[in-house]
Image 1 (cartoon, rainbow, N blue to C red):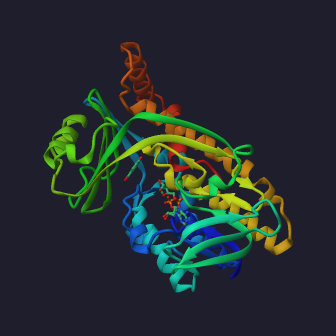
Image 2 (image 1 turned 90 degrees about the vertical axis):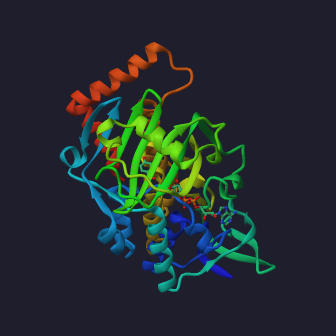
Image 3 (image 1 turned 30 degrees about the vertical axis):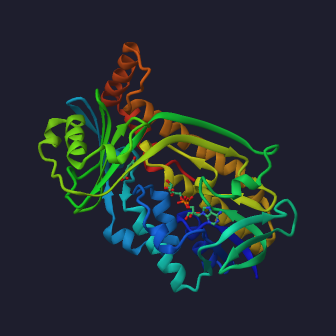
Length: 389
Ligand code: APR
Ligand code: PHB
């Protein structure tokens, strides 16, 4: 087989890049390790920056997002019984869209299949060969056969546990990592959201977040020790703890119900540089991870895709490699700002095992300054809705 761009990974990054390139007449093949249903079964965050939403619309996949997504003009920050609102639209002129990543990925799959996308599922033993030459090729196994795809470029969209990043030699690659000393226990319930906007809460018992997927599907999180497992937490224990971590005004209104999903995710900040090696380009979680506190996971993938999409269009139209040559530099410049924001939000809102009384006073002062100071609220809003591409 031969294609112009071989994309490793059929998650949001790979699917969106493939659709955008298709619309410009650039041929791709997506290799996905799992099945479509398995990918769609993943429960992921659902806050979209305006830039991601624009890319979805440009790809021709924004219809359901625009009709079913919730437009949020702000969010609530709570600490103890105190709470205040950050008005995104007042400070930046733009809102965010709350639309589950599962639905977004479903829309992308549907569009790829509608437009004749070439997706190969259940692949195994993917190897990216000769990425540092002008003739890269990808080998893999599917349907019990060894297969090969010759291509011009490889887009590594295969997430944190994929093969793409590992293809870049350790003598070339530098990795930066921070692992947080806690996890997020998340619960999905078919109940109405406790509030019309998200609530990020710093309580003396730990962090909590109240989010949603639609008018009858809510997503809640509480900070928990890394040693915990979901089976340690009955639904009732979860609801009782969540109520103790959010202001009573909201706790009293919380509608609880049986969990339809309950899981614990670790938190890490991670960046691998560079995001290009020869004809291989890394996108999304393959190159970087953020703690979910700033709702940046999917949105950091958006700017990678934006830069790589435009660079490839520029190359195939004019044989101009300027965008490709600057991809890593441009992508990383925005990624590091998203990493900083996600790290800062995590430090603002979580309780750390080694925090001293002085540290707690600093955290409280940060929250009170944020509450009182318009300029600091504008800084949070600009980062949350998304810095420019
Ligand atoms: N070969 C083929 N496919 C692979 C391989 C491999 N060796 N390894 C992983 N994959 C697939 C995974 O099965 C997954 O479907 O690559 C895809 C990577 O998707 P994601 O992990 O979702 O990463 P990305 O598309 O960059 O999306 C980032 O998704 O994980 C969330 O929080 C993250 O919101 C962010 C977004
Ligand atoms: C979610 O809805 O899952 C979500 C929202 C905001 C975050 C993290 C997760 O910061």
